[in-house]
Image (tube, rainbow, N blue to C red; front, side):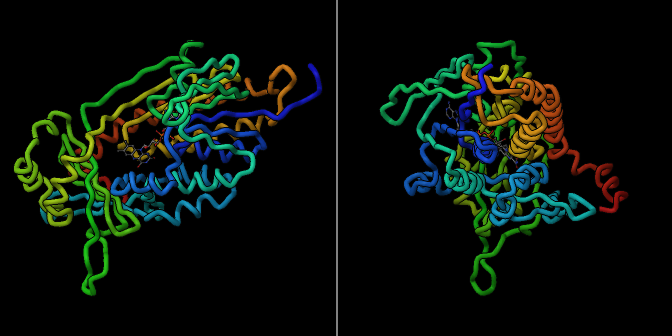
Length: 406
Ligand code: FAD
């Protein structure tokens, strides 16, 4: 093989949470990084207006923080600066009965952060890196992964553009195009399962304190849950003193609650303490305006196609959100991948023939060691669906927590 080396380029498809973090890691390794994203730049003023009122928040846990910490660019501090710590879950059992269940005897906690804000913060860091190029409004249509060619539809005119890269990484979410293109070239095991439960986001505005200042309507250092066996309501705090609530319920219940009267009657019966906090007008507006999202579990194996392509995050393992670990696991994918690239001493350079030394061995090892962990957490997330809806209210569960001293 010739000794003349050329800089290697990685194309990352999808500038969501996992794609941005992966771009930062690859840039730090010295690769040329191109991050393609189907949407417009979410930091543009007009895009911020489109997002207003859509505050979906996420719980960031130690699993995700560890990956942020490893990049050593102050990312953990940046993210925690935009987060509200949640030290326990508050279970709302009946009208005036609540019980606080700490997440840890050692004070460990999870953190609520606005998804859009988190994505923006990561994009800001990515945008400042000299070896990263951002391609917004680039929608991947097809890819020939064997030779690293990708076809994108670009901008509102949907112009067809071809791009190439030495390595293609799909961080393009649960309905990943990168994954479907990989599946044309290789024997990838793939399974998906929709659950009967759908979700709908509702917002709980700030309350007012005695001086008329905004304050939280509920204790902000808790993840609030109203478990009702086949359905539940949860609420996570935001920095602006509001809460984002999510109603999880079977699709057929969403379909049957189809008038304001039915909705208010349902809330009066099941979540009466939440009504004055959300407000009836807002409750009705949000319930009927907001989408009823479906929830999917996806497992794939392996996650790489030779040294040509790899999927990370939801593209590789979408999970139902009841463990609060989807994004955290995506961040962990990035951390594990780069530990393995380090171990194999994969350098950001290629030979004349396009080969990158040791990359294939590293990506094979990534699939070999990490895929089974992603399958396990998909299963745990499904189990936690049961735990959050029902088990947290059971006498046995509460007794066990008491014994643990929590
Ligand atoms: P995504 O966030 O889906 O990003 C994919 C990106 O790829 C998007 O920007 C998209 O526009 C782009 N894209 C898609 N197709 C193309 C294409 N063809 N070409 C170019 N770009 C493309 N996780 C947690 O860790 N904690 C939580 O508390 C939590 N709560 C959740 C609550 C709910 C209700 C839901 C539904 C999920 C929750 N999750 C949570 C899961 C979390 O949202 C996902 O795991 C996470 O967003 C996955 O990130 P990602 O970057 O892999 O994919």
